[in-house]
Amino acid sequence: MILQPIGCNLVLHTLSGADKEPAVQPEKDCCRPTTLFQWNYGTVSNGPDPRAALISDRPDFTESSVSVGQGITQWELGYTYSFSNDGATQIRSHSFPEVLLRAGMLADWFELRVGWNSAADSSKTLGGSQQNHQGSEDLYLGAKLALTPQDGYLPAMALIPQMMVPIGSGVLSAGECLPGLNWTYSWDLSDRLAIAGQTQINRALDTVTNRPFLDFSQSASVGFAITERIAGFFEWYCMIPDGADVDPTLHYINGGMTYSVSNNLQLDWRVGHGLSAAGDDYFAGSGLVFRY
Image 1 (tube, rainbow, N blue to C red):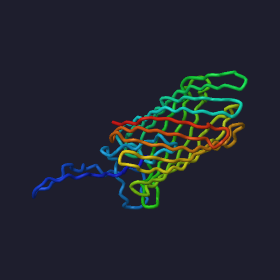
Image 2: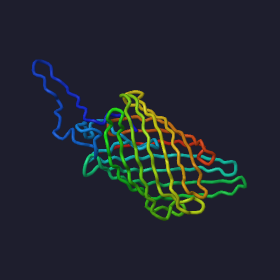
Image 3: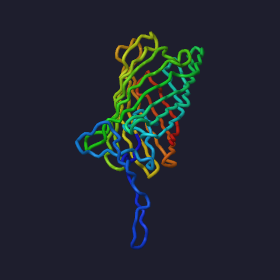
Image 4: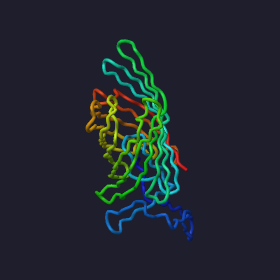
């Protein structure tokens, strides 16, 4: 969730003297529909403006409620280090490159999503035994459908049907397709403050018994502008397994910052802490986003 205007904001530069004409002329299709539905008849829904700063899905857990726009390709990449110690086993994990490709096509309200990542985990017990796992994780495929624009107290919303495709290495792969659905929603409270959340359900496999269950997740995020180029966020999210044999409920908090180098390039940083004994003690990461 990034605090940037979604509509077609045209900056008009005027000439001195009696003749004053805009240096930037609005295009005929500038204010084309960007969502599938409207809250009210006649609600204006403007197409994404490629001249405005990009809106990314990273670095927070909550996905944005807008698509990238037709004809736009956006790459999101990053690295995360995490550490956990339950008193018996210590685990250090590295996650890279956390690729998410977002390609706007067909209409402004539709984007294709492809994600891939690799991981390296090292676990060490009190007895001194150590295990290492490294390789590719499963492939993420999805599509984001921008449903509604914000209209007063009514939120901007998007729906993301998604699935994990088993192409990963060894224990890093589920070994079967795992479908899911993600519903995101957000409100711009002012030019400098926004709130957002998402409700998600995915098919998952228990890490011990390998039996399937439904994994619910919920998040709540607050984003705020610090300067014209720097923004920050605070967030809570959880994963709640329904029907899992061993996998526990996990709660996390995290926060971070983004820096807009330009309208088409963004850098980000984040840190987080696990609130559940079974979760990561802490994690930290950074990344970048660019579009063309």
